Image (cartoon, rainbow, N blue to C red):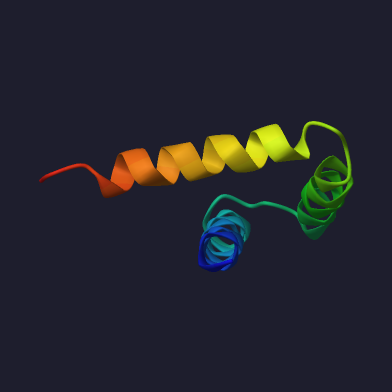
Length: 64
């Protein structure tokens, strides 16, 4: 649950920065959001979730 919330917040911040700095139009943001919602309802959603969790554990294990 925490990973999902932090992932949503991270992606929201990235979208906001693209909107402010790189000229992302509101329509592009809406399309990206709708794509994400529709993708979450498909059969590939568990694979995407597992990949995100794997990437998060890999990043969390890095020693800097």
